[in-house]
Image (cartoon, rainbow, N blue to C red; front, side, top):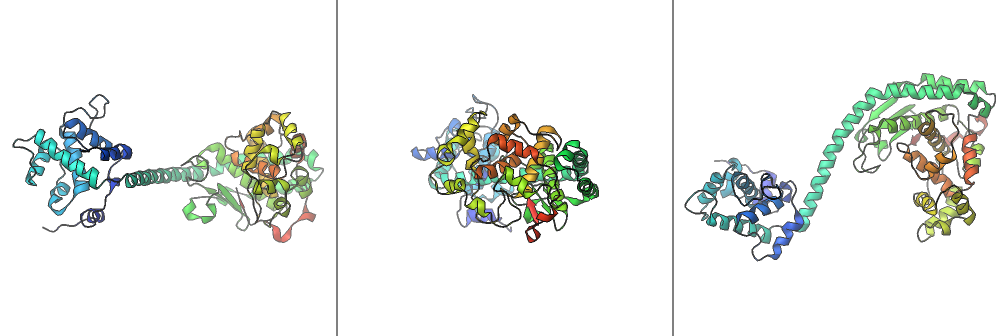
Length: 464
């Protein structure tokens, strides 16, 4: 007879490697404790069943704990032990365990007897079989089992489960994105039309009807074909980002992959309809900002965020900020050591604690290269998305209570937008003051910024 070994069987037979990953969910710590016993697995049905259960085998629902440990060693327990024996003691002589799986106590008895084990003269579970099973199990615990390998195998299996789950979720999100992108885009285009037609926008921006008409034109010409739903493996630019807008292609690309580094473990932000809409609006704002040479003057943004700048060049003002340098070289994040005392007192008037401020400060990125946290087009997109979150329109004025929620990041579905807006403010020591910052945000509107076009500094890609 020709015997063909799999890779895993070769490792066990020839290389004598342990493979704990065969078990569904071994209790590594309980198995390891058995090493301290003179007889790791005692010669009785209860302890042999407990051992099988610790390996992760399903041996039924009987017994005091409804886990199959009942002292009655029958077919389910025999099947589990046969599986254990085949997996951990496989040799050429044991090949019958592999090609003819044992499913009954009688089958286990006959197979062990054929291997010259002294399991008694009658089929069934008796003292002699109990002794044989105890010896085989104890030998495994003493000579083969390794706690570290077991724990590592469990971690690998958990990761594999997460990967499988992530792939399924990603495929569902991809299909949802393709199916719903047109509908959500229409909702966003209506928001922009309402914004451009609003008297509030016209009052804030002055009488610049031709600029508002330009906005409406670019809103109209953008269609769902310009939105690409992709997985990270299809587009390396999506790594670590919810989405991005590519100026070169004029397209918005949505990340439909489950992202281990963003949000809760194994979560997919784009599987949430609100988060999807917020993200699409964010990237659509980049599109409009690019087409009209920026929605607001840079100087107007600097009234709100003095460290704001355009383009991808290093932000020297932020790099030299006293707050940023205290965060970079200081010992821990303590508001009373980093911020001006007057700033802390100002925030206390609005029921914002030092702990709230420290949470924001602790998330400020110390960037020496191209700046992201204070890039103007990002702040524009952050602001528009937060207005959508709170007001379901783009024209409303933010309130004191809403700004407090933004500081505390209590904005489900728009957390990254509130976070990145706060990072730039925090980098300047939360200056201007709370009220000045709020009034400044609410004063922002459309302006014709042709004279401030940054030329070579125009962004190519804007990662959300």
